[in-house]
Amino acid sequence: MNQSKDDEAQGSSIRWQAVTITQLSYSLNLILSFTVAILGFQMHMLLDLRPSLECWEKILFILSQTLLLLSGGVGLACVLNRLKDFRFTAKAARAREQGDPNKKLEVYRAEYKRLGKLTWQLFCCEVVLFSVGVIFSVVIDLMIGMKLYSD
Image 1 (tube, helix red, strand yellow):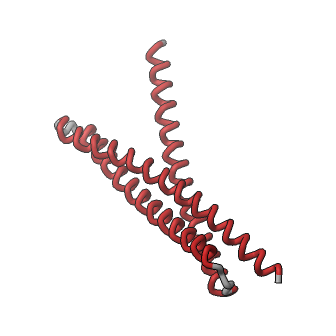
Image 2 (cartoon, one colour):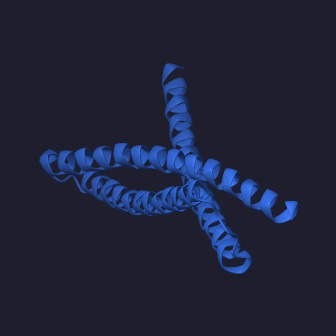
Image 3 (cartoon, one colour):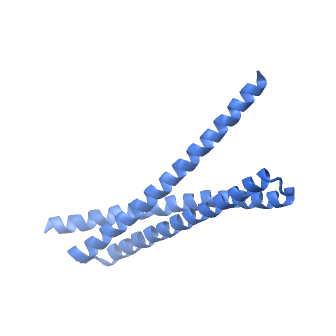
């Protein structure tokens, strides 16, 4: 009876881990997509509308662009880090299945744990950079919009 509950708990943990991995992938892709879309929209505004920006508006615009570019770069680094993490996880699983020495398995395990932590750090950094970049983008877009429609 207890064995069944332990198996069920283990299965639940594995299922939720799979859900977490899927949701992280979805979130990364969504933020990267929004980042590219916002950067494209801002460049469209800058090139097509050619608004005359005041000094502090230019600073906000440049900050927004910089933060969004950094967010995209960190997001890309996060994706590449996750791929490396998955490779080491697969190597560890293969080593465990083949009965490789524990030392080799521990090296792989330590590496995928380190990469897993780095993935979450990069993801959080991406979210913060994206959020602040979007706030600056919304502010500058509203300012440009008010200028264009006030004339």
